[in-house]
Every structure is written in structure tokens, then in C-alpha cells.
Amino acid sequence: MKYIIYNFLLKMLFISLLFSQDIYNGMTLFTPYYTTSGSTTFLINNGHDIIHTWTHMRGPASMPYLMPDSSIVYPYKVSNPTMNAGGVGGGIQSISWSGNIIWDYTISDENYQHHHDICPLPNQNILLIVWERKTAEEAYNKGRQIINNFINQMWVPAILELEPSTGNVVWEWHAWNHLIQDVDSTLDNYGIISEHPELIDINYGEVGNSSPGSNDADWMHVNSIDYNEILDQIIFSSRNLNEIYIIDHSTTIEEASSNIGGNTNMGGNILYRWGNPVVYQRGDVNDQKLYSQHGVNWITEGYPNEGNIIFFNNGIERPEGNFSSIDILIPPINSANNYNINQNEAFGPITLLWSFNDNESFFSHRQCGAYQLINGNILVTVSSDLRIFEVNLDGEVVWNYFLNDGATMIPRAMKYGFDYLNSNLIGDLNNDQIVNILDIVQLINIILSNSFESNADLNNDGSINVLDIVQLINIILN
Image (cartoon, rainbow, N blue to C red; front, side):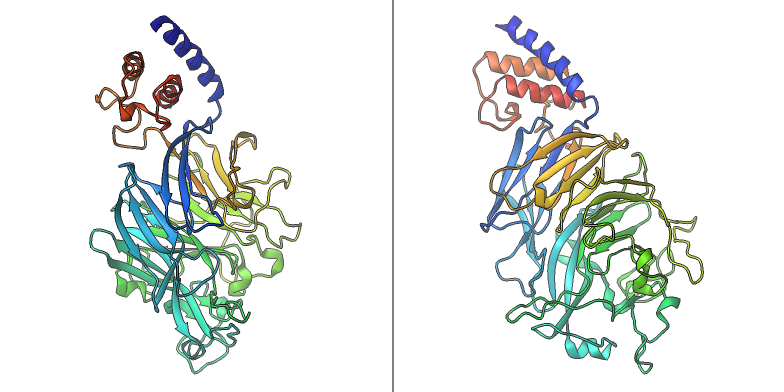
């Protein structure tokens, strides 16, 4: 029996080497939308086998994040959000590998409504995207000219940093403090918009939905957020304005509400924006590059194209037609970690570093994302197609996954290496802090003894057999 298993092991090792030659060998995490109120988070391997699942009473606002201790941080939709638009959330949970809720916070009240994305920080805090409620009167007093929605309000973007250990907000940024308008010279925020690319025109775009009964008063529709630890900066994406923005996180709360302070000495003003210079009157429709984009993030230090910006350009109302693309740009950052811009011109670049659209064969009008992996491949989620795929920098799709279980979409997915977890849950069966051939020997012995050890059930199917050996081989091959 041992000879048969070892022979099988060698064959599977050879097959895995061939299979994983171009695919990043890791674990893909995602939570689909369903028509029911709940959902399930899946962690799968390259063979589409389920490694682990977490079940939820409430559906996702966006995607969950896997933490090195094997827990996940999960943004979800509360039952009665105070302002309801696409991507609405309101709740954030930390859930252990075994499914126990470690902490749970609700951000859904008369002032703030969480929505869409979150971003776990290196210090264990969490960045949250929220809508901030402003009455029509407040908006008009700020220079807004038209509010045409059913609830007569204007919910503007804000970013909060939550400290989970206390539940306190320890840092915050408000778009409300960085607005400009050119229609009422009696107001403090009056100015020539083209002379202030660091500010956002309060009159650009519509606000919410005028349909009777709708409580949608969303203005910018920020849909994703990411953090760069090296720069101590935050990037986020506005679908409605077709722009991405970078702000300084090194500020105090007071500095973030002003135009001075922080590493760049620009306070909470916009350091960099890209995608639609029409918004700040330094271009026309021919200069627009983004079309309802999602999933903006920096490429991790040490990865190919490190420090550049990647995103899923959904392509809604793109002049060439509705098709999506994965785009990478090189931001014009300088030695002071600020961003170069020429007088009277828009922020660069004019051209992208890399773009992929697979001959215009994929398109989604909602959500989606793209993340570069350490081997240079890019993990892409096409949400409305319930598809996740991996493409290399030569434009070759090397891995495909389609979900077919009644879900309506997959917001976004993220892929993690098997060495990402700092616990013994995945593969370290002999507890020596190393996953290698000795763990395979240990696993074979467990199978031959007809015993059951939960940490040896690597594919989480309730039994220990050759499929767990295959899973362990994939872990070692990473």
C-alpha cells in the first residue's frame, strides 16, 4: 500500500509541475452575491477545489480579505442601510478560520454609511469608505447648484480609519473639506477650477436618484480603496466621476481637513488624480481614459511593475464601445513623493504602461478587480460573468474559473500564496514551521493509520485521502 501511494505521489508531483508552470500557485478568496440575504466566502486552489469556506448571514458589500492569522475581514450589507445605493454595506466583521466572529462593527447611522471596499492596514486598523450625509441646504451653502433626488440630500465621500481593538475612529478624511466651485464668489471655496487640480468640483456630476421612493443620494460613488505603506498614501476610485485619487495618510486629523501638513505638506488635498481631466477643466472628452472603473490598487513592492497603479476599467460608454480592460499606469511621482503636473495641463501619463482586453471579449458594468501577483501574472475578476481568470504579461490567459451555483456576481477576488498564512493550518503537519516532504510522509502515515486529524484535511472535505496529498504537493511547489 505504501508503494502505491508513493508511486501516486511521484506522478502527481510531475503533473503538478506541468500544470503550475505558468499559473501562480496559491489560494483564491472571494464572496459571491446571491439573491438571498446571506452568502459564503470561498477559498479555492488552482484545481478549483474548495480549501475552506465561511458562511455569512448577510451578503457582501465587496470582497473579503484574508489575514495572515487565517481569519478574514468581511464587509457586508446591513439589513436597513441609512442611504441605499450600489455597493452599500454598513457592517464589517473579523471572522476566524473556524467561523467564530472576533469583532463586528456597524457603520450605518444618520451621519455615515459604509459602502463597498475596506482596506486592512499593517497596524491592524481598517480603512473604510463611507458616505457622509449632507442636507440640500448644506450643499447649496457650499456652492452646489442642483440636487435632484427623492430624499433631497447629498452624500459625499469620506474615509475613516477604524481601530478594531477599541472601535474608535483614529484618522479620517472628508471630501467635504476639499471642494471648489466657480459659481458663487461669496463662498470660501470659490475659485477657478482649472487652477486647483488639488480640489474637487462640487458641481460636477449628478447626485443620486430622483425616482420616487429611492433613498439614493450618492454623488461620487467611490468603490475601492488601497494603501501604500512605503508612501503612507491612500488611493481610491470614483466611478461617477471616472477618476482615481491619491491622498496623504501621514497627516493628523486636523491636517487632513486642511491644505497643509503631512509628508507632502498638502494636508488632505488631492495629491494625484487621473482618468477624466474634464472634472478639473484641464481637458475634454477626448482626454477621458476611465469609464466607471473599479478595483484600483498599487502593485506591491518586490513584484513586477512594483509601485505602479493597476485597475479594472469597466468601459461603460467607452467611445470604442462597451468593453472592459485591465490597465496599468506609471504615476508621475517625484523624489518628494508628490506628483508632477505641468501648469494648465492634466496629470499624466497620457499612455498606459500595459493594457489587456482580450480582443474586447469581456465586459462587466459593476464591481470587478485586477491584482498583480508576485510572479507577474494578474488575477482578474469579471463580476457579472461570475468569472475569475489569471493572465500573464504576454496577454495569455493561463487559468480560468467560472462559478455556477446560482450566484448573481462575484464582486472581486484576491489570490494569496500558500506561504501567506503564519499559522499551522495549511500543510505543516509535523509542527516544525516548515512545509516540505516530511509533511507528505506525515500525511501518508495518517492515511495509512485510518485516523483523522483536522489539520490534515487540507481540502476541507471531511476526509483524509489522496486529494489532500495533491493539495499538499501544490502547497510545497509554491
